[in-house]
Image (tube, rainbow, N blue to C red; front, top):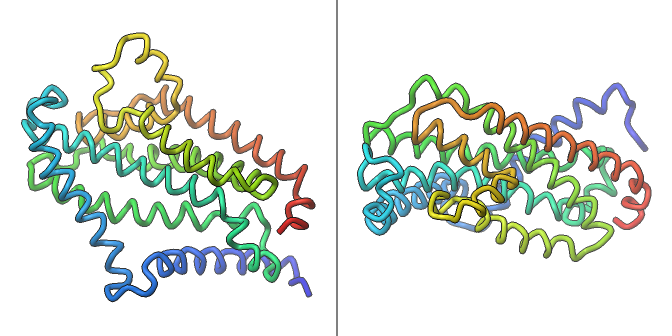
Length: 268
């Protein structure tokens, strides 16, 4: 029996919060340290990037930020990778959310549009933990937060809006065509290398640099680095263009969803 409409909104919020918590629990289920891994893994990753990559690449790419010496490349790398991980994980996990939660969808009165929201919520929490550790290392290097950090919530919001929009389209399509999940995994791997995360864009030919500006993650990654590495405000034109693209994709996703919603429920 369906619940009264007056009670649905509160129940939806409680379910989303439950899914968010359960997503974190399931990720480390069966491990001795449990949820502590949510802190350990980001810490280990940052340690590797800061102390290993700084030795390997610091001298070769010192022009990233000469004032930081050998650690300039590490900060360049981590400031881009942390945001990318939140984006990539959101899109990838959302692409299979309806298939993985089919049993829940059959039992619980929760609109399909709302269901995937727990994924970006989870990834934002993990990103916040990782970025907190990163700030700790920046403070140790004397490169701590400044007033330009006020732009970080905006950058994160635009990035996750893009991730949500793409992930939602992929989630709908994956029910209709199961190969979409695998295609998303391949596409994210290619997208990683088409985004200047581990290399400096200036090493590329000029024509390729111009072409890469069509990649919506380039303004996002550049924005993280503008604030964290170069301690300046991000390009609002670039962020605005990505936000507009994300809203257009979200509109396209909602239109697609309305056309196939009945079919989706039958397939699930």
